[in-house]
Image (cartoon, rainbow, N blue to C red; front, side, top):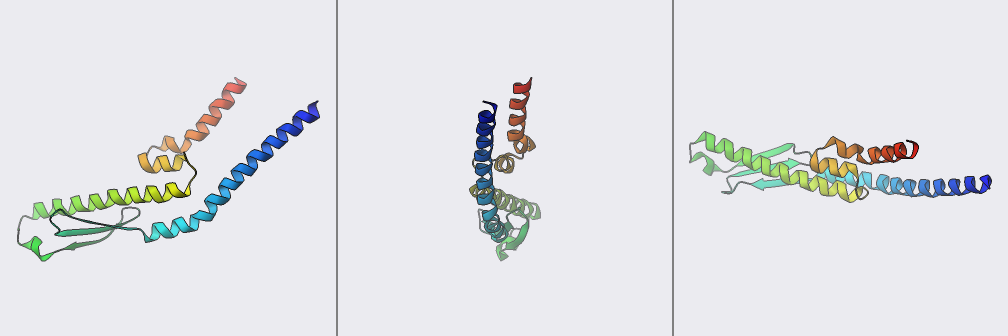
Length: 141
């Protein structure tokens, strides 16, 4: 009887390992593609009047800012500063969304990493581990 229980438990563990290992292999095979896509990602945003163009990378790093000659006609340097800042922020927001979408396409559904990228909540990274530990505590408590 005990031998049968051990064999069933081993079969269940082996099946779970095969499932997790399969997920890992799929994830690992896509990491190089993801890395390339993130390295190449560029998001360009223009100000509403077209006078400012900002380009950022996947992490929101500023790659370039271009100004048309028309920005010098209005000599309000504060307005120009706000226009540049607003345009760069919009480009960064779009880059963050594009990065989240790329990463989400390469990770398992419900991944805490994707939730973390979306929300910035470190608890999302540990959510699954916390749930497993709670179940273990309930089983043994």
